[in-house]
Structure formats: structure tokens, C-alpha cells
Image (tube, rainbow, N blue to C red; front, side):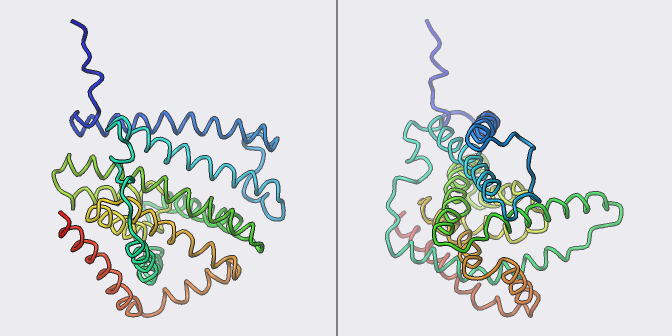
Length: 307
């Protein structure tokens, strides 16, 4: 008799196997997606891989468009598409599995926006603290490498985010805010957190593990703490509501704040203002953080009532 066990949904397998298969699918789509992105951008812009670098973006519209194209399609192929494919392997109703089949409601959307706005002072302060962490002299080489990665990311962000036109703002919101919010939340909260919740038999453990992976995979180590807080916030928002659109909304707004701010002012002015604010007394972040926490626990209470 033929063996049809391979047709069993991945959700019926052991969580460790689910995670391994998810990583393999993620790697497969990431590599093929990056290759496809490089080839398509080569055909569209006529720029070969490695032909330009970040230092060649300033004042060059074609090079800037090329990097924005790479940024958008890499997020689509590295995060968004793999998350949907993995969710389909977990359940043929992929949108149902990641919690994307539920309407969030206008009130919850507004609360998600307010939540992330009130959380900004805390993440800014934690970012300032994170940058001041002393690394032992024995790890000087590692620190140099991390600083180089951070500087490269900051320079790239500065070039991508600066625009003085409304059209440029719309493109930046799409590339730097919406696409990353969809892809990262679908993958980390919609897929990984679900797997870890079954694996550890604990919603709290799943949120924490996923948040650590989420922050680490950005490879910006001097921003690890604020991203960890964001990951925990998005994770609990999803855990307590079962609706992926709420963390997607909060994530998108968090990404949109510097994009809109840069459109209104220059990136350097924003950095200076944020550093001056963050280095001030951390007590300024207490009251907004309490409000954000109250919103988060409101989601918990609503979720418990529904359950």
C-alpha cells in the first residue's frame, strides 16, 4: 500500500521538525529570492552586483532607486513569501494559521497606533543605553565589526529615508514601513511564535524566544534592547488577541515614524533630537510606558474575555 504520510500537514508533525523545515524553506526562498532580485535589478537598472556601494548613493537617483528596489524585494522574498509558504505547509488555510483572517476592528487599530507612539520614549531611551554598553577589550575585534555594521546600516538608512517630495514619502512608507511590517510579523509572530508556543507549551516562552530571534536577526547589535522590547510587545499583542493585523499595524507605525519625521526634517536633525532626548533623564519615559502597558493589558483582558 502506498505511503501517503508525506501529505500530512506540517502542523501535525513535531514542533522541532516544524522549526527545522521552516528554516530550510526560509533559507531556500531567501537564497533564490536574493538571486532573483539581483538578476532582475541588473536587467532593470543595468547595475551589476557589487558595482556600487552606499557611498555612491548621495545625489544619484538611479543608484538610490536600485538600493530601494533591493530593499523591497529582499524583504518580500526573505520574509513575506517564505512566511506564507510555511503557513501553507502548516495548514492549507495559511491566512487562518497566521491569524490574518480576522478583522481587527477600528478601535483596536487605533489602540495599536497609540501603543507604539507611547512606547517610543522607552525604546529611544533603551537605544541610548544600548549604545553605551561597554564591551571587554578582549572582544575589541567584535566591537569594531559591530560598530562597522551599525555605521553601514545608519548610512544606508540616511540615504534611503531622505526625501523632500510627497511621492518619495509614499515610496519610502511602502518600502521601509509597510513591506517590512507585513513580512517580519507574518514570519516571526505568525509562524515562529506559533511553533515555539506548541514546542515549549508556554505562550510567554514563545514570545520571549521569538523576540530574541527577531532582535538578533536585524544584526544591529547596538539596537538590540529596543528591538527586543518591540518584539516582546508585538508578540504579546499577537498572543493575547490572535490577530496578526494588530502587531502589523504597530510595527508599520513604528517604522513610519522616522520616515515621516525625516520627510518633515532632515535625518541628522532627527538623530540629534533623539539622542538629546534619550540621554535625558529616563523618567521622561515612565508615564508614556505605563500608558503603553495599559493598552497592552487591555488587549489581554479583551482576549481573555473572548476566550
